[in-house]
Length: 474
Image 1: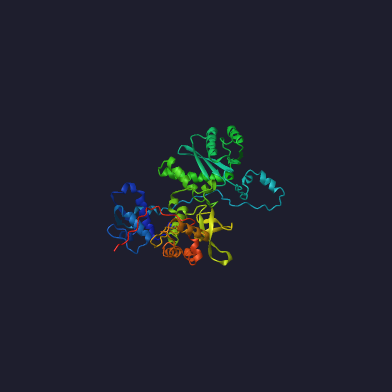
Image 2: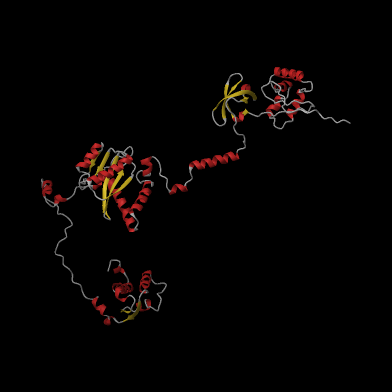
């Protein structure tokens, strides 16, 4: 019995003997009807096939009752003197006398021996003790990827060998399947690795024959790579590669147990390893090796920043009150707000440069160049206004007229036709009644001088064919 079983109660010990016998002869009694004989009468009531175990029974007894429920048995009580198994349990065991003396200590040297250290070193038994372990000395972390590589071989595993290459900076792992571990095959795999990630500065390996061969040393020397080999029987000196081998070996064994193809499962494992933050660097190997995080299925769960910004900007445009779009080009004449002398007035200007979607450089009449937002620029065109007189002329209103232009226009109008006269006051009334006139134009039309400045430089007659006026003849 084990130490814990020796502490069982007598009831538990008797039940344990039945369970032991049933398990021992399982191959012979399973599926057949058999009889259990015991000299402990309480078991007949507790484990009888026709009686359930009490609810208040110990958990251990309930578990054993469940085991016995899988068998077809009858339990019978007999007295101890008729129980042959009870006699065997009372046979005394012979004590084994161990003549060898266990020595767990050394005798102290009471005499002063000056050459005790020399004698201890020369003693064939005492000199075999290993010295205490030294302090852990870690490799210096490189300043960037592909500066120091650690390599080692894994296998044989399922009849194949694997070359493991680890980047000391990013912890990026490459696994190459090798049919043989010859120097030429090893050089071929390293050449494949160098074609993707470039030549490293240092390569750390053990003293394997493929790593110490003349052809491999010549291959590294021709590419300017420093080769460092670890001391023999000291795999901890190349701990980075050894840990990588241990990790990859564990994953390969799980792949073999799951009966998946290594050619399909190994790339999936390496991809998951490369996008997972490393416990040492707190960054994923891909992020340190390539400067970016690889896109994975988890990326689909995270919103794209570009799409998120576009959605937010569209929502802002929708909620913004402004509906005006920019249709101003370089060279257009506009009216801009003039903030000189603390007066919020409008001045004529010309667009000379477009700085952005809504920001422009404009040049005032006095030659000064200022920067204005589209909200500070007016591009509203006043529509043509028809006077309510019998003989009217369509005049486009332009904000760059002068009083002299008005005088010239009126003279031309009188000389060309007596039937067409322009009434400035009626024109002003028509402008004020126009729905498309802005607040700026309303302010300019409050005095006679402003009214005169709104007339065009030349009068343009309509090309529409004129018909004589039909008057009502009563």
